[in-house]
Image (cartoon, rainbow, N blue to C red; front, side):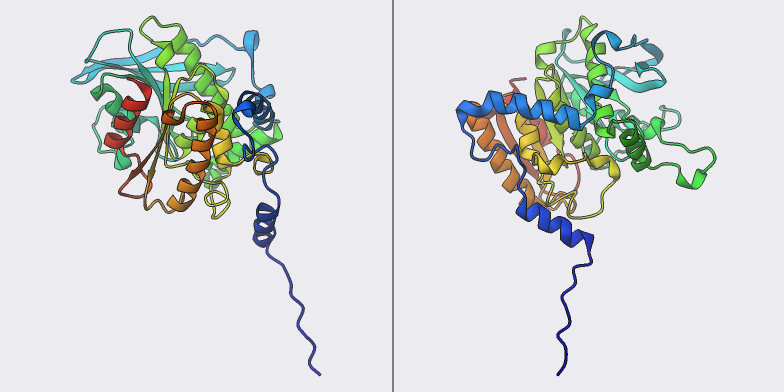
Length: 352
């Protein structure tokens, strides 16, 4: 009599899918009501800060001077663009651009713009990486600062850690150069996360804007695509000085996106999915205006997961008393920003 071959479960992926299916996030908003919103946000935000390693980043008086330096300034048809560098923390300088629109007068509405996995922040102003003088065509409508200036909005564009000019380099191991996964794992060894460090740089950018007289701090927004959408989502959850949020090409369930296929290590926060799903993270921004932008054919943040998680986000906003402050824009395309539709929704929900 033939023996029955035993069923073997050898794939770690199978185990992880089982855990996701059987152990729902412990601090999800599911089942909570309007009376729970403020307390839930306070408790989850504190937990999220801990998981991001926020306590291992400089706070309050421990923050170093910004030491803002101007590298160049030029006038364009859309307004003035100035390349700057500021210091986020010792040994960590942040290149970026301050973009002031020709339309309108100060004080301006401002958006902080963050790029994702690309050649860097230079895409925000549509110039080449090396010289910053040659105009280039930017794919996926990621020339965020151009879009801002065209609409009379000022922009602070910052280079994210391990992207663009802040690319990770191993001088002795050139074949390993260029992976932000390396920066992410290094951060973990230091009790930090790369997501937390990138959110920290946004916070230091806000420190910079707070010193300027041409900034309307009560309309300050944040936007980004893909890895920029990641930081837009987490920064919105943590940073109270942000007043508007436009994450693009990122919002979805973790289960259907970064847990369903290979992604860069900079996307992950240890233990996060045991605590919260993505709607819970972005729900910490409620009741402030948010516009989620996605492509109906995005292969890495599938529309099915986007729509189901957005319904959960709507539920949080409804409980927070602001159902109309939460909008979803679905563009006819894949993994990109949809400027015309996104800004139209943001002007409406954000009152710009």
